[in-house]
Amino acid sequence: MTDPKETINIENVVASTGIGQELDLQSVAMDLEGADYDPEQFPGLVYRTQNPKSAALIFRSGKIVCTGAKSTADVHESLEIVFDKLRELNIQVNDDPEIVVQNIVTSADLGRNLNLNAIAIGLGLENIEYEPEQFPGLVYRLDEPEVVALLFGSGKLVITGGKKPEDAEQAVDKIVSRLEELGLLE
Amino acid sequence: RLRKWQERIRTKDAGERNLQFALSEIDRMASALGVPRSVREVASVIYRRALAEDLIRGRSIEGVATSTLYAACRQEGIPRSLEEVAEVSRVDQKEIGRTYRYISQELGLEMKPVDPKQYVPRFCSDLGVSEEVQSKANEIIDTTAEQGLLSGKSPTGYAAAAIYAASLLCNEKKTQREVADVAQVTEVTIRNRYQEQIEALGIH
DNA sequence: GCTTTAAAAAGTAAGTT
DNA sequence: AACTTACTTTGTAAAGC
Image (cartoon, rainbow over all chains, first blue to last red; front, side):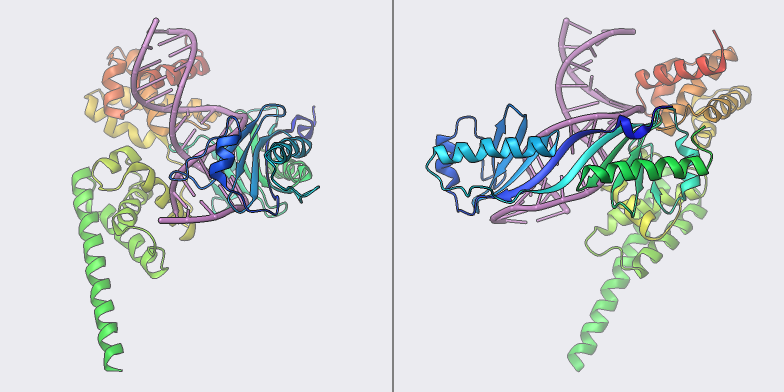
């Protein structure tokens, strides 16, 4: 029996930060190669890094959102690249702007198929959302840690809403023990 | 004070008119769907509860009315798919679905997942197949669902595949296209569910 | 509420070959 | 019938409508 915790994989990390400087996005868009900026569509400028792969949304206020990184370390690496690119454009960037992780998306595998109908009843219809006509996953909201888990018939999971990697581990533990005590993981 | 009085009356009148509009819309859509009067009554009860709980603010009356009708059909055991409900509503399917989930959650309706068997009588009737095909389809659904095959699958596609399989087993073959049309799913979905079901049943 | 970005899960659908 | 592409669901920040 493989511990489901060992199947956890971070798929996406969202973080926010700021350079503490207002920006003229129009000129940044001109000077920054590969930048996508369409203020009519969205107020942020989109800049993609290749290694590590991520997408940064840069705003007029100097605030930045980084998405798509596979780890918190990658978030920092990606943002350092963004900071350096801005410095190359003679824009002042603080030495180490505070980076706050806002959301971590994780996948995991319980290793056996799940009867979602039985789980919906077992976990309590009032606590879950399961509408297979609209989406194949069962939505389970946990209080501690405060995350949302999507459970699939294959036994695969998606956990989102966490701020740190341990949130996903705790969530998997709780889900496994709840399903075990309900006898729905045999 | 007189102004406040008038305002209250105006608000009350507007509220009455909105409720009448919602109920007439539920009636219109229920007729178009051909569901019995009991379903309209259940829908109007749910709608009034949503109104009392102030769940309509920020949402269209039409959207909430349609969602309560969708929920009522399910509660009464004669579900209509979101696609079918959307066809008689002025609200798009996506909006009906999210409004339904919101109302269901807030009112604590505790709706059980739709049992594919609930679609069998209507689909079979539309196809004009025998009672034998109908009970065979129900049997296929029960035995395969017990094996966990239903998890995550849409109830209409699951029912359609079982009816298709049953029509073959009872020598009353209907084509995948015919079944797909009454269930409003694609032939590809029927093919996929059908393959899983006959494999689970050990029919080769 | 919406707009945009990223990523996974699995089902369904549509278009092309 | 296979492949590809795309949409459904979940969280999250950003600025502006």
